[in-house]
Length: 188
Image (cartoon, rainbow, N blue to C red; front, side, top):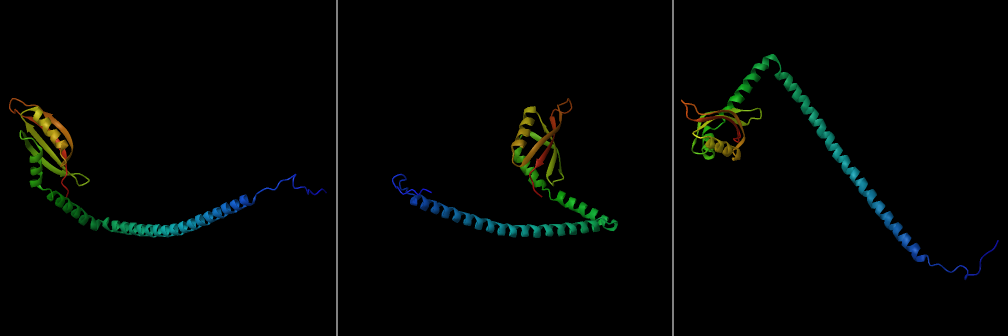
């Protein structure tokens, strides 16, 4: 076995700085690993609390659904069906009574041009409890009627305008007639 004694054949290497830098980087990486692990554990604990809250709310929703099913079964009985029908009828009447004719005419007066007449108006409610106005408009010129339709479409008080029928003037009636359905923005 040969032991190298000559230091000149293998010069001294300075690895102390490299070792210190490696140790420092290793300590920094170990510290960041510990920080990330503590963040993961904290997030797991927080998520466990959230899962517990979601489960609790889910149980409450299921309980409310079961109660609603029980109440629906009670209302579906033949002896209660008449009362349910009557209450639906009364609620419909109350909604219809809630439509303000004064406000309808005031808003139409602000929106429609002066040379357009309202011959007929019939408010109704759709399934979403929005007020629909079925109207018959009349004017001496088609341009005035078109201007009225544009004014209704551009107004923030009225929604979509659906024209259902148009009648040109006749010998007995000199007016252009337009059947129009408008969504009215009045809330009940």
